Length: 447
Image (cartoon, rainbow, N blue to C red; front, side, top):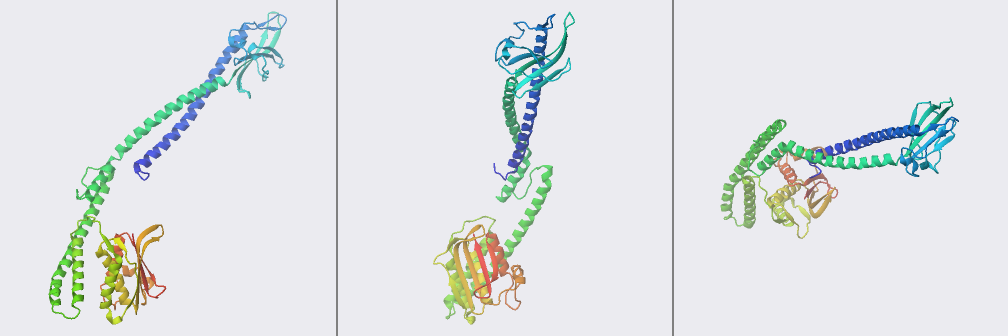
């Protein structure tokens, strides 16, 4: 399950909430169990105090007598964890149980007769004090404090046992809850998966629009997507028809031009070469017009060869300017693009440079360039020594029908086509002033 997945995020959020809830519940339940265990121990110690009271006997002399055998055997076993003490109110020890031999006397607090006090000592023992006023048959009266203490290990063991059991059950419950949550998420997000599958079917051509029975919340989205799909399909059809009409309209003039070229004796090969190139362009555009949105893997094209051919053609077209082409091309620069796309990009940029330059056009190609955080397979740079383009018009000329100078021949769509085509290929087009020639400098990054 991917981190960007909506199901993963919802499941993670639910898991964090459940974990926080179970952690808080564990703390609360453990504290509640501890208090319950302490209360049970307090009641147990009260029983031991009553048993000591029942076993004690106040003699006529005023001395307290305790029998050797007590109701609770643990009082007679040293180190048993249960200890008993009897003190006068003046903190004078009267009696200690045999189990408390060697232990320090726990000083009792000031108590009113008939009251209990339950506390935990620094020695990790729970202590219960009980104050009582005792009067024998001859009228002798004494005030005693009966103290019963038990090691806290009993409560700690009970709490530890409860904690382990609680954690096992909470873990098992958490796993079950996460499984239930995952099942509910899959069920709840099923309409989203359905619409995604339908979109994939549209992309692969198995469907023309979203026609499923979607959830109420997704009906508006499905309607908007259908509107968008129909609009894009209509635009694509119009572009395809217009391109096909343009390509077919060029077929007849090309055929006539090919026939007329047979009569030329001068530059006959050049005319044939240009006709052949125009025929390639028409075939390329026809293939694009006939394409149904399928992606075909392009073969390797040598960009250096393409640019050299464009340079040779432009040198003849602009022969009156006697342009100096400064070419910095690698011997071979194989890239995987449609040859027609490369002719479209490089041809338009180099043709514009020739139109605007005074005398020099510089073209360079470098491979495996990096820009920002991204690697590009090729960088094409085209510079001229013309007047350049004002900063205010740089963004405008990338729009269809806009030219930097209305006196220069053209339709104002070349740069727009280049910009759109580079964007479709996933590249970047940059324009700035040339530092070396002083005119315009275009940089084309292609992945």
